[in-house]
Image (cartoon, rainbow, N blue to C red; front, top):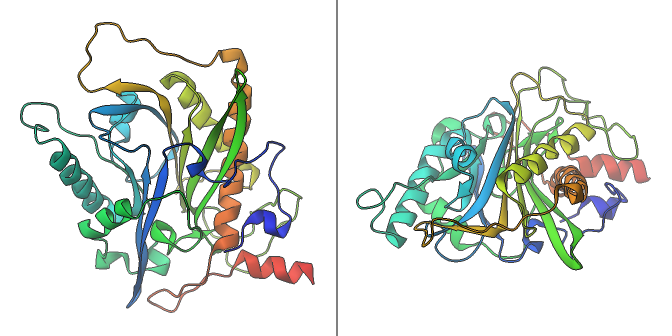
Length: 342
């Protein structure tokens, strides 16, 4: 699995974490289930924000909708309450309901009072349309697949044509899952901000590499009809307002690559911090919150931009070929880069 840096492509000036992945944030894990065969190229990707019972011990979270052409679940409550209480699942557009059911059943198994003597649970699922390279009407994703993706989660993140990214396209090339991270120094302590993307966006011919090169996918540009889901994680103590501002800067990383968030593109950023946990049943009327000073937040903004940009490029570089139900394929950016190196 090749990554952007192996081709000499670097984004920005900040230092990556040891894995250069979202799992550099302590406690974050990622798992995939990949489904292939009989015209199917799809799957599920799970981001586990922290171990333990997230419903009882929620995370501070925020969402930024850059362009809302999408069918994700759970974002409205995240925006309103500023908390995350389930793992995050990514899948294809028609798999959202199935993944929501899987998260609900999992939460009820851990918390039998849900929906009876306490509140319901807000399942969070993001999606992109992998239709051209997969038979989306087959409704191939099952609840068991979602559960397996969660159970497979660990610190190593596979990229490219895996999990939810199996059938995705990006700037006319084969897209998919990518990740990256940056180190930040806060109050003398090294912390991290990481991104994981489901990259399925961008018009053919619009991709711009950090060195200014514009790869040609030799496709038909057409309209911008894709989507990208960005998941940002950090162990820097921030509040919801600050976290949403950080999420907004992921849009700068997307734009650096040449995207303009077209009418038919769903561009959504979901962020969480592992600090400032929120108990389901507060013991006190007043809850203390520790947060970054606003005049020190620029480094987090830069990190969100750089990690998002590099995560997309990692998705493109790591992608492997798939063939859709009608024989449709996408070229690989890795092949273009090899040709340039000759």
